[in-house]
Length: 139
Ligand code: DAT
Ligand code: MG
Image 1: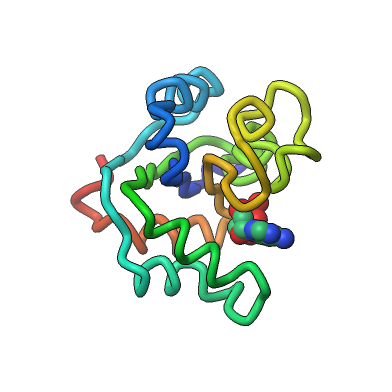
Image 2: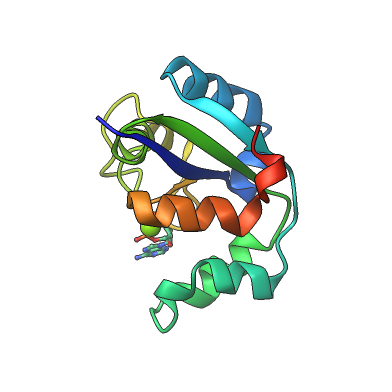
């Protein structure tokens, strides 16, 4: 299997609940290598650009509002099969549908505020890592 990069974001609800450490521990125990992380507060413009693929959907404005509502923690991850394995670790978008033991099932309140982002393809993993991290920030 190919070594891939994927982007995680501990979303503002994760930070507000002080769950950063617990979630990062689960990510590391699952075998992901952390190449970079930082805490930032997204502007509405940056949140809107990151989620531009969803522009026009009914949940878009709320998503942009939520993602810019407080600090978040982008994390660049690397592992064999990182993209699919990370999606398995976090679970379905709506915590109601997420498998037992997944991060969203354990910690998320609802579909809109679901604790963590994960890239959906190896190509998007690269693009999304580059959205938050310069080459020298990936170590
Ligand atoms: P995922 O984050 O699992 O890749 P997505 O890419 O379909 O899910 O959507 C991006 C985010 O947008 C998702 O994490 C939460 C929000 N979202 C998606 N569908 C939603 C809905 N029907 N109602 C509220 N928020 C939604
Ligand atoms: Mg997605």
